Image: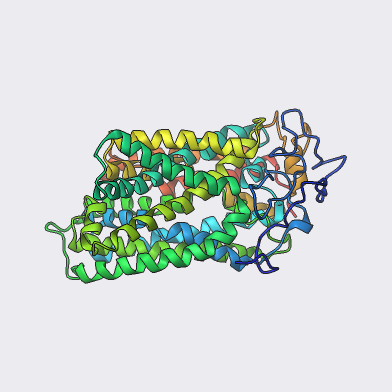
Length: 510
């Protein structure tokens, strides 16, 4: 896809001359000079930096994107979000729903409803064009300059690394299987080499950054859709549409399985509170409804289709080992094509995650450039992947991680959406980046206690309602194991944030 006016690709920077400052740069709020705790500098600080280059790594970090470097239309976000969600992991999640004991119609219902949470991801993305900076900087409005750091360390570092590990595990399982087909020995050394190869390819996407992502993902979404559609055809031929569990679930057991399934499906969209990162280069006057709609639709459609295919696969195949089941179904010549597609999808998914995680490292004030920040997160994610692959069963890792992280990601998403509604998406990038004492986002001692309280209350509610393989909240246990951690955590967080900001008058009403 060529960089035209219809493509949200930033203008190439000319390293031979200084970058032009965007709105708000210079003396005053949004200038390259920061508050007492903020970094400054060329590559990845709050100061002005050159825009991403077409042929090289992106050097812009969390600094404000000037109006003259913005372009494209919201509809271009469709492909950006479709590519990472044409996913092998969707097959795994869909199969898990049937393995929980749900009937096929029940599993498909959970797929349709759970994926509606992508609307939240889309709504939060609308802050990107308005603020012109990353989501991890926008969240300073929610938690304060200092309070935001603690939140971002958890959501932008630890949970991001966990998702890197989860997706790399999926690709590595497939890649290790292909290595065995090629005659390579079954050993930890080969396993580690596969993990490192997948991680390296992913980190290259994150290093080259936004310019590469918007150009690469359009074609990649088409190529992956073709491959996964072929796989889906073989799955449908083997599926048992009359499938019924040997012992159908009823009453509390059914409610528990439906709740756990919804949590599993909803966990993916709830993890993307960083969605403004991929919309910040759009023009400031981009329609928020269009940004939200194209983001949500791009993720929703492939997620629904391929998670549903995974559920169908479990009716006719033994999906307790999804890699072996799917590869055993496919003709031998197509297996390498499928494995390559799984790896490419993982790189697309984790490329976005690592890209945003690098911005998150900068947003907490760490004096490090964007590219080294990406590498730090990548090393952490690779280490977690090796541990998951060599120590844990893959399906156990998937279920545990996805069901547990919603305790944090659900309330974080709810607070972000509530703040956006209360402010009517009026975010000032220069003020968010200034970090100055006494500024609008300094609040009390650098902490917005309304946001911190809302997040803590929402997380507590989610913990009480969550059900995983190693922890069941007391309310969930009393309700027969029903997992309502997502709606409980989000509802409590939103309600507390709304009430606290009203009582403290910390959000100016338009």
